[in-house]
Amino acid sequence: MLDEKYYRPAVHFTPPYGWLNDPNGLVYHQGEYHLFYQYHPFSSKWGPMHWGHAISTDLLHWNHHPIALVPDELGTCFSGTAVSDPNNTSGLFDGASNGLLAFYTIAASERQLGHPYTQSQGLAYSSDAGRTWKKYANNPVVPNTSKVDFRDPKVFWYEQGQYWVMLVTEGQSVAIYRSHNAMDWQYCSSFGAEHGAHDERAWECPDLFEMKVENSEESRWILIVGVQRKAYAPGSGSQYFIGHFDGERFINENTPETVLWLDYGRDFYATQTWSDIPEKDGRRLAISWMSNWLYANHTPTESWRSAMSIPHELYLRQSGQGLRLHHAFIRELKSLETQIEGLPAGSYAANSLLCQLYPRSPEILSMKLKPEINTSVLIEPVDGTTLYLETDEQEMMLRCVRQARSWNLEFDQHYPHDYKISLGDIREIDLQILIDQGSIEVLLDQGLYSVTNLAFPESETTDVTVKVMQGVVSLTRGEWQKLHAV
Ligand code: FRU
Image (tube, rainbow, N blue to C red; front, side, top):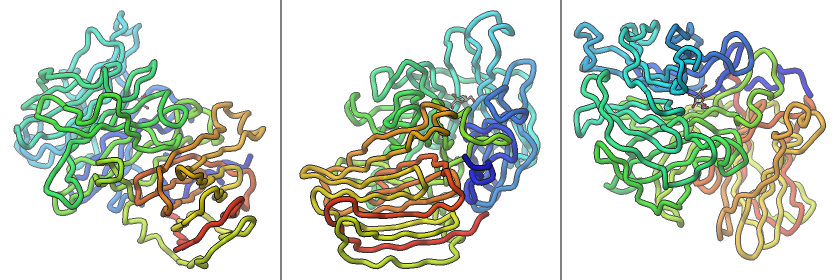
């Protein structure tokens, strides 16, 4: 195991010290992107939750700001959202149009309340572009007297109805509320009990937004929700639903059994998207916590723990399987590019190397590959964390392997893995791999598949190897793009 400095990412957001989990309160306001996050400043393990805060103008260079929300006599501050209130619907801003509202879960203890319904929704507000926050005097705005799990409010302005909508997970479903003043909330409906993936734990961190279907006049509503233990890859992950929203109800347009995964890796959880991105930009920008509750508290760093994923742009596009979300790394990453090198196109037989690079991370490796049937290509971006692109007569697959070495078994037995993702009956595939200290993020097939995994190397000098293990593969296009640290 290396010193923790080798695991501090170069282009990803990390807390200066202490523990980080979910992204919270993502909002674009007056030219600035805000990133709040679940934060425990007094230890690098999860504990009484605060909202940490950082601001950026390009989603890559982040300035740390003072902690925004701290626990009080009502409880600690779990996940939630922030939104602009330009029309002062809340009346909290003295007629000013630049107010920000934040909704968070007040998590009390059973001892404080004398009953197990400890989670309720609170409101905080800021009149100085998010620099300082006050909690609303009459919290909670959505009380709770019946649900053990009731958390992670996502709030947005529903333009068509001219009111606010709040989503909150309640056990294994999502409750939808509405309000005109962001303080008095009326329950409308619940979605999910019979839809999608479930496990023995509560759903978490919902998000709901409308998206244009690419190259069409149509739009759909996308509902994202976190599954704690039985996501596609073992442990935590996010699923999504595609459908319609009538201002009170979400209607899934797929069958209830359909399960759509937002990412197929083990370290892409609690996904949220930025609110209030200006219409002329129009992007749907998402970020996720790059860890997994199965081992999050034990990853091999000491003074700080956990990073955010690189922000993704999401697209809603027709694929061979129907409408699906597709991902791209944000285009701002281009601005970090220092050098590009081409990889020699051609046909490669068993035992030949497509490339062996000696990088100082971070970098992006992009390839378009055409494997023959019964081919296996090893891609090892970080020692000990390997991807195999495999084909048989029926399909192409990606096998993801994190080796069970003694030191990583020591930090957590759940960390190693070996699982497969079916990429369908295709003959050619493009992939992009973003390699940074501590992680590899892979986008395949024009972003139809996103695979995000932590990757802690064992040695200081790690190379990127792509080698044909079996069969023959054509490299149609290959490129290695170096990035500088932020
Ligand atoms: C998801 C989650 C949320 C909760 C927060 C607590 O990772 O469990 O449901 O609000 O983390 O830190």
